[in-house]
Image (cartoon, rainbow, N blue to C red; front, top):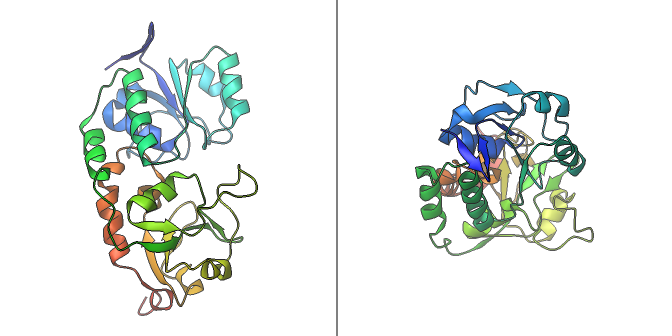
Length: 259
């Protein structure tokens, strides 16, 4: 179903953000003509691939003649977006830092595409309107290893944690405001008083045998990175699924037992 952007009918969309790809793909997949190599949801996307979020093939995107290109402040490089605009393409950029801005930005994007308010968006709004669980716990979320890096301040992940009743021990403004994923090894995680370590399976693929052993004295939960970092249809069930994964947390040294 075509939408509209001002006077321009939106019938062809290139998405440079996996989360936004999923949002459009679950709502009106026929509008997608190009997506990045990292766009894995919904499964079975049948459209052109235009390389990655940080190195999109601008020539290929232009050749697809999209009515709208979807991008995000955190995911995409400004020079690439400037080049797309210089070639006469419309670019819609979202700047998502927390759960509320994710929901409002998604609603605005879908409205601009003429897609209204799908059921998954209403379900996500209802899920995240629930109060945060208590008592609260102090948490750290490593997102990379070699070197160790963690989710920091002003990130969607930290906002999700807050809504789950978790206080990110790295939620302090860094010296460099652009550094939202600081380097921090397990010793610093402990020094900051974390009680729980949450290990996602993306961008680094933490597993029961790779990650928990670095935090033997702390509770560790393994979670889907998509639920913790993607804004889109996954938000409809992410809260419930993440709470279940957190409830299964156990000491880091225990994860490798019988595995």
